[in-house]
Every structure is written in structure tokens, then in C-alpha cells.
Length: 342
Ligand SMILES: [Zn+2]
Image (tube, rainbow, N blue to C red):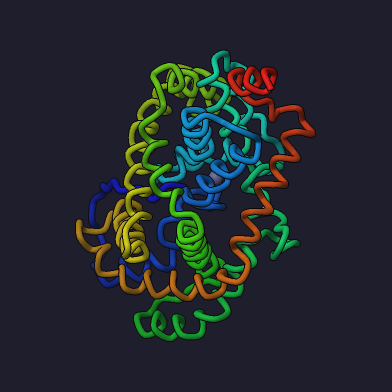
């Protein structure tokens, strides 16, 4: 998901308690019922390298494909029961039907590039599957991110538990795991942008390139699949319109943060802010947690350093092959035309 930079919330607990409750409630990523799999940088990296391996995708196609690859996480930071249910529809482990909806309606090159990216990000057989279901290089039984989160929880759990116990808070193992899950995703993003510094600038671009037609395709194709959760199609479409505007802004800022020399710090601060919105912490309270979050990201980074790049690169190949097997990897018309001329 893209680290969100919005905030909201009423306050009804003391800050100290909230801060630790927040950890217990798994920081930002625990909020969606569907925990994130790869973060925005991961999806951006996969889209970038998948498009390149397909041939000479134009910058415009690449940009729209990257946006589509991230837009699936549209509702991951909508911290309401309904937002979680909407995110869950787009992260159905049994079916990629919702993720394929834009592709079946796409008519233009722009729309197809966007819709292809959107199709690749699914938990049934797409990019999220290697993170959450079955990794290729590591975490083959449970998914790369989940396996690393388990290792991280075992490493930091003994230090964190007494700290929380001193404040009367007991951290359930599942809750600690979700905190670690978030740290792992952010660490992977940092490793990926170091391996390919183009990822950050492309993320920024991808927040800017979606045209009104592409955004309309997103809205109109998700309307029917989200209607059962939203109540009706018109309301579902209105929810997509509202979330999409926020999402693009977050994607832009996330890309910008990953371009900075102190990217880990930037991500930690943004994650703290995201938690403010999630728990209704007082404005600015999330910043106090940033050092702790940064420390967690650093530990996760050490665990992921040996194989994150290999896992994500392999994900590119695996998902490309699965797209081809489903005859979905059809490049946009302009690319087909270029190939025909060769
Ligand atoms: Zn996702």
C-alpha cells in the first residue's frame, strides 16, 4: 500500500496508553482486514520491471501500468469497517475477479496499460500471492513477508513484551506479527529503491499520469464489484472517487519520501502519522513513535537484505508467466504495432 499522509480522529485515551495500544493494534497496516502484502515501492518495482521485460513499453504505458498496480490498495488506509470490507474484496485469496474487472472494460492503450497493472496485483495468483501465500525464494509455505515478519517478531518480541507489560498492556502474538509485517514491507521498499533508484521518481510520476478516462474506468469497473459492500453501485462509485483522490496524493508523497537520503526516517514519520488517523491520536503524537518505528524497520531490513531483491525479481517472472498463461499479458496496441513492424 502507499503510506497514507492523511489524518483524522477524535481523542479519548491518554497518549501513553494510545501509543502502546497502537503498537498492540499493529500500527498502520493492521487496520485493513487484509494486511498489506508488498508496499507501494514493491508494487512499483514489480510493475516497472515487468513492463520492461515485456519489451519496449512506452513511458506512458509504464506509468499507467504502475498506477494500476498500486491502485488495488485504494482502500487499505480507509480506517472504517466498510473500508476494510472494500479492501478485502480487492484482496480475495480465492479469486482475482475484482482485480480483473477494469481489464474487461478497457478499450484504449491507456486504459489497458492501467488495467493490466491492476490485474497483476491480486492475492489469488498475482503479486500479493508471493508475499502472503507462497514465497518463491523465501517463505515458500506462508509467503515472503509473513515469513520475515515471523522471524522479526521472534527477534524483537522478547524486548518489546516487558516494555508493554510495564504499562499494563499485553501484546498478543498475532498483534506483534502485524507490527512486524508492516516493518518488513517498509524495509523491502527501502532495499528496492536502493537497487533501482528509478522506482521513487516513477512512483511520483504514476500518481500524476492517470487521465480522467483511466480514473473513470476504475470507478465504473469497481462499481459493480464493490456494490454488495457499499449498498449499491452509485455509492460504491462515489467511495472509489473519494478514495482515489487521497490515494494518488499518498502515492505521490510515498514516492517522494523514497527518493530522500533519509527515506527510512521519512517512512517512519509517515507511518506514525498514519497511526494517528487509525487510532485518533492527537495530531503530532505519531511523531513520538517514529524512532521506535525506524528501529523496527532497521531490524526488518537486516532480515530482508539477503533475499528481498531476489524474491521480488522472481515475483516479476512468476506473475508475468501467470499473466501469459491466462492470456492476460497482452501488451497495449502501440506495443503490438511496434512489434509487428519489426
Ligand atoms: Zn494489496
